[in-house]
Length: 103
Image (tube, rainbow, N blue to C red):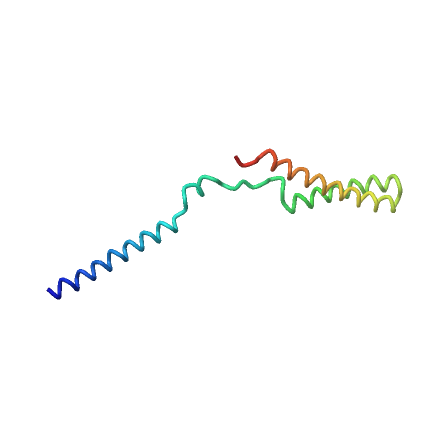
């Protein structure tokens, strides 16, 4: 009689251990909702694209300013062109986000 009681406790512990393992596996599994929604990457954003747009704006501004006002005009034009390039980059980034909103 004493032996059956001991085996009963062992089987109860085994069932509890298996149940705890299933609960742990269930909490670690990704939900179905997480696999359905993928985060889209904005192709208009990025440091390289920003540097390119600002650099092109600065170069065009420096060229135009140099033709109009010499060295001082080139410096002023480069600053204005870099500012315009940065503004254009922000516009393109926001425009893409506005057209590709999540639903």
